[in-house]
Image (cartoon, helix red, strand yellow):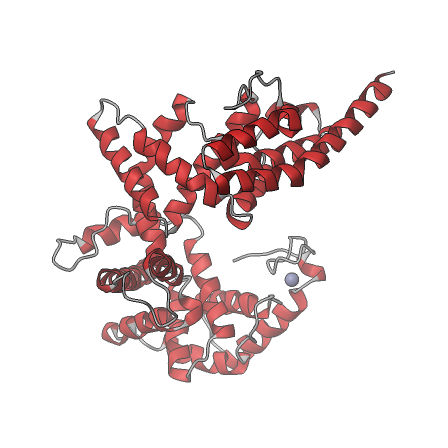
Length: 437
Ligand SMILES: [Zn+2]
């Protein structure tokens, strides 16, 4: 990897390289090269420079870089392996599965969507390997070398293990052939890890309490949280399956949730828009919702402020009653979506619920609220949702329907947001005509 003095420092500080980590990197690299001795090939020097960069950077992660003299002593021993059988595939694979900071070095799961993990299913490993190698994202090998250096800085290593890791490190940099070797070992480790997680998942009984007492969905949720690669793998497959159904529903524009299930999100976005309005350029106004900040607000509202407790049951109801459509592929996708939403314990479910929630809130805001059950007059705009004349009859209506928790949630959000929205609106109305004069 080449970096010039005026580039931003790869440590992420935001300063220029020359003013940040350059000196440390050069010192580390210099000591490494001296310890490697004379007669180092240009490839060897290139590898030492990359190693020196990743080890010399001041990184926020804990852990210290390994001793450059030790690395320099071990490096020539790594090169001396000429015998093909002595190439440490298995040892490197053990490191990938065993060292904590190498767990991030895996084949991206979106390249594995159609892979079967069960041993009794036919896996064309050679075909798969070739396809993976051909499709790895640009930057994968640089990322791999960075992950390995991160592991050197943070994981405990015996000298023999360090030699194995240095071999892997050099595979990432030498040429296409050695890169293919690295990709193959990473692929095997990825598949081994996923297959092991799948076995554990198959043996997991949600009804038997865990050591920490969690059962049911909570136990499953914890399982997926502690097996992120497997969660990612399964979730990527599921998201691909439910995608046609999600698209069909959202394209129809007919998805609606009762206001009490999305009230917090709507209020939070109204206030955000009103507060941002005076500083927005015409282009930003034209770009409209949802910007990144609005998306973040909605995610927080759904998960941290627990609007999910009211939104998810409604979403399940709506999707359960949604027509399958005539297309057999769409019907199957719709069925998968219903199954997905009835579980609720892995990232694909969180992502799907989030997408629908954002769609419902943004839909209501863009179209404006028209009516609410129990409210006689039609609504003229968002401010009506902050008015007691509208909200009190609606809350009474919910109580009459025995929607007690829902009404309590709505009252909480309404009382928290409505006065702030009204104040902000009043200040805008006051300032806007003054500015136009
Ligand atoms: Zn830096």
